[in-house]
Amino acid sequence: QERTFIMVKPDGVQRGLVGEIIRRFERRGFKLVAMKFMHADEALLNKHYEALAGKPFFKNLITYMSSGPVVPMVWEGAQAVKLGRMLLGETDPAKSLPGTIRADFGQCVGANIVHGSDAIETADREIALWFKKDELIDYKSCVAPYVHAH
Ligand code: GTP
Ligand code: MG
Image (cartoon, rainbow, N blue to C red; front, side, top):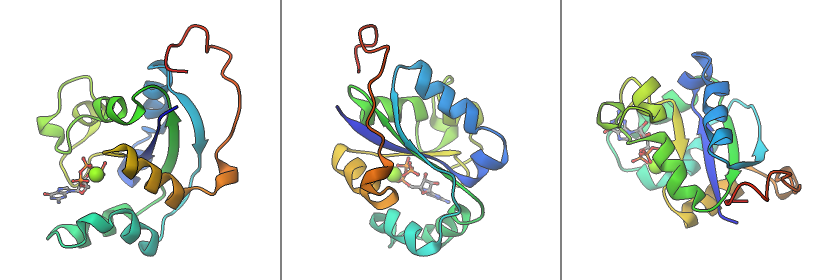
């Protein structure tokens, strides 16, 4: 099954949106595979966003992402990467459709509440970066006969 890496960013945690974001992935039928609560250091965040290292906003991005604790998660299901990005909305909350997390709660590109992998290969890389193998929990979903994605 396809897996994606989703992370509640520091502004999402501080504003009390952790439960809301988990709820949206749960009710969409995705299966939770891993989750933790941590304060990420700059070294980890530099690696996470290494593709953006040359961008003018990179330093602000790392400062923002290391300003408080985050909630990294792995969610599984059919087309988890693409559909996960649909639940998130666009990078810019102002360009996101109502009903997406970023349109409903995000404030600007620099404070957009949540991260989601942008491709299957990116998801694999990010999951390996944030989680050890034994933190990915293998269990049987009891709703599998009713939820296509499982
Ligand atoms: P992530 O899920 O966090 O990876 O966002 P994304 O995939 O929608 O966007 P991208 O990977 O291109 O950028 C990563 C993050 O950098 C964004 O979520 C923003 O927080 C920030 N960012 C991207 N573009 C800009 C920008 O033009 N200005 C500022 N200030 N921040 C930006
Ligand atoms: Mg991205």
